[in-house]
Length: 302
Image (cartoon, rainbow, N blue to C red):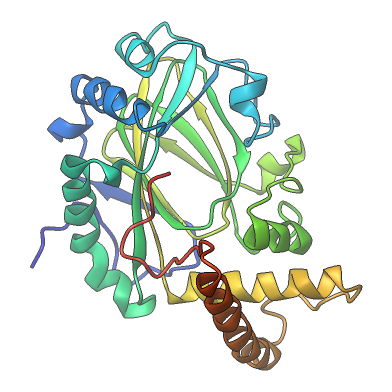
């Protein structure tokens, strides 16, 4: 049985609840700065690096932060001098690199038996490594995947918001996000801080955030290295499809009921959407057009 590198409480784990975890990865050789400088060089050649300066705030547009607050240094230069680079950098889809894919598999294989008990269907595995200068900020945003975020070095504060809190992320914002990946309606308000689950992360500590958990990350006074292990499950695919269906109803002038308010209605809607999206994907494939399939074992790189 694979070794468990993330420590999860089997009795209390719930796939749709934010919770604290610990881990055994802080000393892993692939997650030390020297290794990450080399990885950054390789990934930048594949355009798998995202970066912005320390001028970004919690309220900055997450999608536009690299354009609004550019960091013009190369990945290698930024990472090697992260202490004074005044930059935030994400190494994207590190599973595209053979060495790091093995790490992703090692970690996710270790927790998969626990996850499967309540949330089967793990797929679309991916890894994201964040290397941050002092006092840099990850703007408020949501992601599709379930996420284990683990601190490797340095300290930072994570504000995470219940994925069912509609005061921080509305139903319409979720519909747009799930249907065409738009975060346009996912916007920050300073009053949100009082609604957050706050994690003060340091090496060996981490948090679990379900799909579409709104979050902001603020780095401390030293450089920081963090890794996220992400994946889809049957339940994330189901919710995504339901929200995509509601977006189509909204575009047709119908105000849809929120997801989760009526399990019976959601079940009927899901059965119809399964057929609709299956035919839609089949038509796209027949026309030679791409189809995003989150049932694949790994998220595509690029």
